[in-house]
Image 1: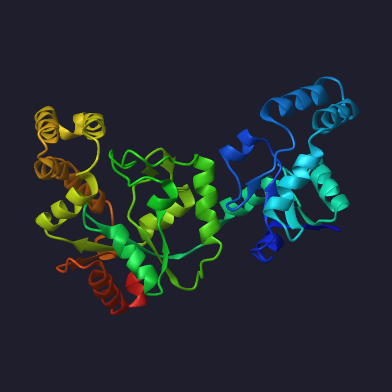
Image 2 (image 1 turned 45 degrees about the horizontal axis):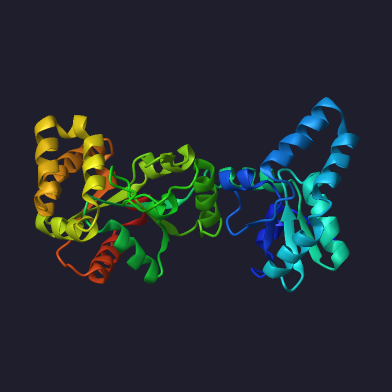
Length: 347
């Protein structure tokens, strides 16, 4: 059986129904629905051949070429689908619900699969995703200088039942020049948007949502403008942590990183850090004086934070001093603090 459903209807299906994206590996890598697996009907090169034939010769010739290219692949498609969906229930989509997904749905159905064909394909999901950023949300921003432990506190808030979206995790970047931590690989801009929208779709918009204070750009990806504008208008909880505590936290995070990586990242901000400070920071890195290196670059990052805070409405910035070194205690303190603030002050 083949049943055509909308993207919204797909999200209501049980999680046990896998989603097969039959576009090419290149299309899939550029951006896909989170949780989907790639079952490409054509390789990257084959799709170009079929598309060229369609434009230069005609539709029927392109279809025949498609059958020639995939003729020996069909048993492989079915075997792959069986590995992912042994219960023989599967959803399928291509770019816009055209011939590729219909051909795959036909073959899987012929073998005995119950197939859900996504109407409008990946294009319909992209419309759905972009619409998520336009919907109003009760945002509350977690602010604080570098090393304040904001991300860890957000995770603790999630354990306490709060709604949280970790933008840095979605971006695979910690927001500074050193943000990849010499190991993280950032998604494409489109995939970052998809991942964010996928989380926002399940948010209760009548309740507050915590996100960390971020610049518009997190590494190489950009927060979607409608969502970023909502972040800029929202109230910000400005957590204040003593300098030495922040230094201790950052030593644990950066102390084991490769010296060449730290040096290269420091050189990237040399114009903003200043020639003397850059020289001193790199010397500290090479000599293993990580605490001194961190204190030097924190001067720059603290100034940047203050400048960003100055752009916000004063009544929207709510300061709280953090004393404990225990993340769980800090999260409870912040939660108690925000629960005493009138809803109008948070709006």
